[in-house]
Amino acid sequence: FAAKGSINLKNDIKAEVSLNDIDTGMLAGIGGLAMPVSGKINGALQCGGTIDNPVVDMSVEAFDTSIPQVKIDKAYTMLHLEDNIIHIEDMAMEKKVILGETEATYRGSVKGTVPLSALSEDENVSRGSSMDVTLYVEDADLSLLPGMSPAIEWAFGETDGQVHISGNILE
Picture 1 (cartoon, rainbow, N blue to C red):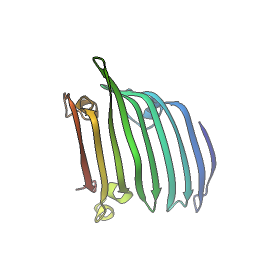
Picture 2 (cartoon, rainbow, N blue to C red):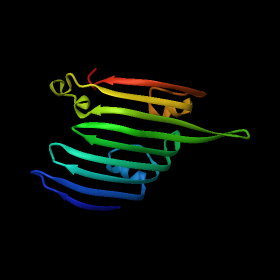
Picture 3 (cartoon, rainbow, N blue to C red):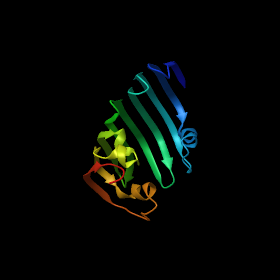
């Protein structure tokens, strides 16, 4: 872990943070996630702009990550925040599976934009704000779903497709 830079609470931000082989379980605990998580994470964060209008570039990759019932071989994301809009430039997860003598890689990815105001539970802030996000599933295995939602007890089989998400958190 390394960090350098400065944050002036009245104006400018200039900071860089890098992560190398950090235990994902430690980060989950810091983030308040109440389930066991394992794996390693690498990443970089560059911050600029001002406190009122930060500009952030973030890239993170995780390896051999697992949460209960789900193991991901590789996950990565590249995000850019500017003008209070998160630009999801690339976010993906990959899982290799061996079926008999055949090896397959299941992949899901996300791209799009999310205005920070679309995440607000304050109707005055979120009104008129809409995210534009598409989830792509390529040769994916539905067995990943139970680990993502307690409402799904079991699932299996391959699938392809995409889901478009728009609106705000209150819609």
